[in-house]
Amino acid sequence: MEKSELIWLDGRFVPWDEAQVHVLTHTLHYGLGVFEGVRCYRTDDGRSAIFRLSEHTKRLFASAHILSIEIPYTQDAINEACLEIVRRNKLEECYLRPLVFVGEGEMGLSATSNPVRVTIAAWPWGAYLGDEGVKNGIRVKTSSFQRFHVNTMMTKAKAVGHYINSILPSREARTAGYDEALMLDTDGFVAEASGENLFIVADGVVKTPPLTSVLPGITRATILTLLAEQGIPVVEERFTRDAVYIADEAFFTGTAAEVTPVRELDDRRIGTGKPGPVTQSMQEAYFALIRGGKPQHDAWLSYI
Ligand SMILES: *Cc1c(COP(=O)(O)O)cnc(C)c1O
Image (tube, rainbow, N blue to C red; front, side, top):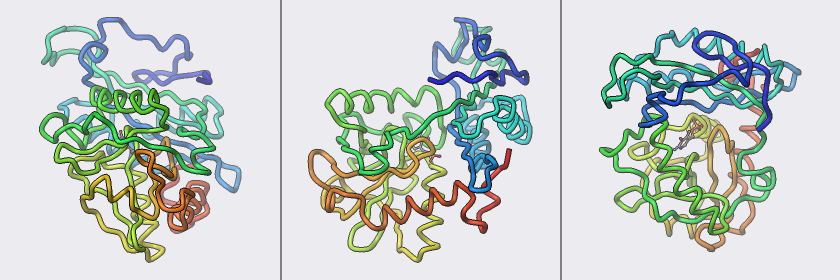
């Protein structure tokens, strides 16, 4: 990981190596915390812009609300801190990690008096599933771990503890020689990957699982808009893993993974095994958009 100079911690800018917490930090023990993954890109005119910053901040607050965590800042203050951490670190392109966590104090589970702390780090980070993956597609394995039931964890919260349900599938897939895991929901239908939403294309129609058991991805929402703009029909409905096997195309979306083609699931080639026309068109549209190439969506870019 490439260090930058400063990290925003509880309203202050502190040197990277000094952004420390106590070992009795509540979140460290029980996983009660929420976070975001946000990207800042260098746009075509040379300025840098954070993509869909206010939507990420809004989701951060929604995640906290779901877990009954009261964030001691306004959304505006968090947005401004995100812009400022990029400015002060003089980063042209970076990944931002806002994190809300419960500090030290009581060790009991309810721990209502512990301080709610917020940090925002930013550092340079390239293609999450690799440049090669973005270009030629990745190999995916259906996980032996299911996406958690909607009454086990809260699917609309991007929560720290939930990520055990992402790390186990991700490690399992990588250990077995695949790039990423696909999780099914507790009814056996396709849900999502460890940190990405899935789209498939079959007979000219794009399908993505409904939001019932998946994280409401901001990239997913962006792709739904881009598909509509191109007049490509899309439905949000449940489908099975074998629907992915026989699909013409499949791709993952996420802030970290951007738009990554899936070329194989469970050792079965998807379509031609190469990024298909809809996937390529979505990659082009997305990469143009984040670099300021779509003036109708300028509101999605927060310039540094
Ligand atoms: C963050 C995340 C995504 C992707 O969401 P984006 O807003 O597109 O970055 C998808 N699935 C899970 C489980 C996630 O945590």
